[in-house]
Length: 134
Image 1 (cartoon, rainbow, N blue to C red):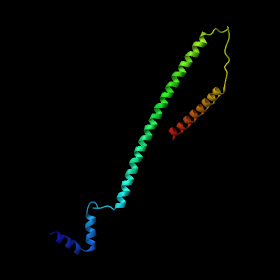
Image 2: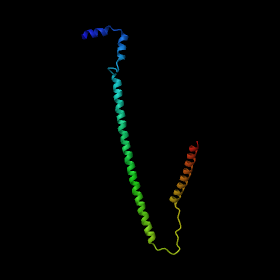
Image 3: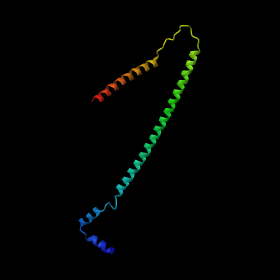
Image 4: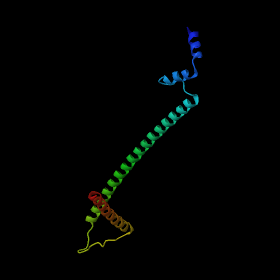
């Protein structure tokens, strides 16, 4: 019976063989080069996903370190502020003495930053009101 099938396939016209191969839901074979290309692409995508996960892990660790550093700095600042206040209140000052404020470069820079923030807030309010009106 096997020989009869091979014999009947050999006698089929060329178009009939093509029609038969297109009627199947999926090809029975794939070119080796294409298969290797697909495997390489899958490998590259898997490596990219792993690297991206690693980058996110590092970013999360950096955020955690940053948050810890800010928390420590804020606690140190509060402690320093309390210490300065204790020293200041413990000092005996002459009657009527008032400290003259000294503006240094840090204070001037902070004042400039506050002015810039005020301008930015005004710009945001202005653009925000334009969008609401539109």
